[in-house]
Image (tube, rainbow, N blue to C red):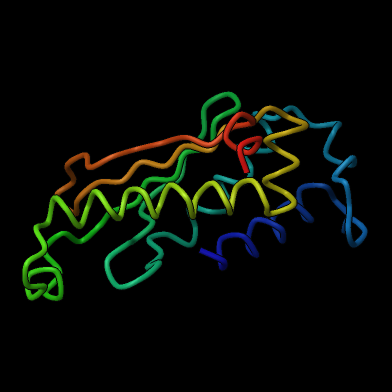
Length: 151
């Protein structure tokens, strides 16, 4: 996941045609519409996909529409270690995983400086769609200003 963040910063530096100063407030991005920023980030991000995030999660696609940036991630629900886990149903595991992923996604989106800028200053919303490898929907959630305010 952090590879994507680094890649986004590098992409944005190119997009802005100059490197923003360290600890930037991203004001140099104000000359671009949010749709343009997100579309450019998507165009650069898809070049690195699929991206294995951990043992069971793969980022398979990113897309955008208006002020929304959507991550599509697949979870390998057939992973051997899930089958070997005694006493834990896959439904129970996925329920716990959903809570943990929502917390992690909020923390990343609301605390990472560029994402925070997009959310607070440009009203961006980050959507996270989780599915199986087949692909079949598992769960999804979004992160916007109201979620960041709860932290």
